[in-house]
Length: 292
Ligand code: NAP
Image 1 (cartoon, rainbow, N blue to C red):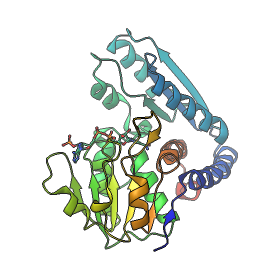
Image 2: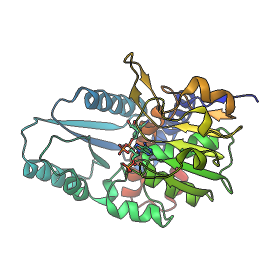
Image 3: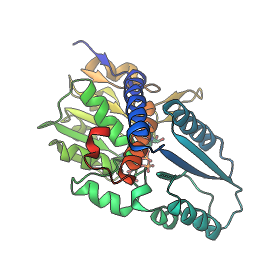
Image 4: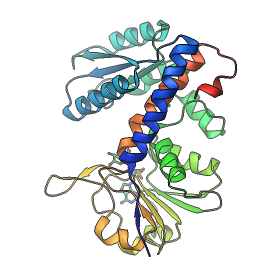
């Protein structure tokens, strides 16, 4: 069977060029410049890379972006006050807190403090509730990126058996909601799942979000399945890799995402789409759907 590698970099670039055009239109016709504010606490090197990539994406699309870099010993109250200021600022359409936060800071409380209409990560319980009822506002970025990868690769979802490994609030659970809303039959697996391999072998679409290199092996994959690898791990040589044993699994699949260059590039692109969506909504524009 011919294996097709899903090129997340190319699909992400295609969506970004569409977003550039849409942003121009929004600026011209609605007079609003999408604005994203990022709060980063401490100096975790991985977080610094993510934040830099978000700033670059904003520049590429013509968004306004601002970074609040706070020292690791900042108090929760100070962060809360900053969130309140950004909530009240009409130039700010998206607020995100770069996770993880240093120990001792309650990230849940702070995330919940971001107004739902500025919660471009879609982590606030209000937005999670909307996603669960299929009544979308913001879409969770990584799962939404995966839906785009599938649809832009011409892979149908309706009626398919989808198995998701991982049940985190950021990836596994919202992914299950989006696949369910797209009419897949969904099974969510986790560390207590019994006979994981045989459940995975039933999947037409297998999505792995575990965080362990080499976790998905060829015996877990049905011939012709679509395999989506969300994992971002380092192998023994220190190289970035996913959860899937790519060399062994790819020949059995019809489509597979590589790591790097698969799901990863889509996440920030979806964050940008959410920020544009928020900016358009902030205008209360009639017929806003023509802008996004
Ligand atoms: P997480 O919160 O650590 O969740 C991992 C999930 O894997 C948990 O639900 C856990 O089950 C499950 N798991 C662990 N060991 C297992 C096993 N032996 N069998 C079955 N399930 C097992 O991680 P996450 O935040 O969802 O992220 C997952 C991976 O995706 C990480 O590598 C992360 O870096 C990556 N990621 C990538 C992107 C991107 O943009 N590409 C975005 C987000 C995350 P329990 O719930 O039972 O513990």
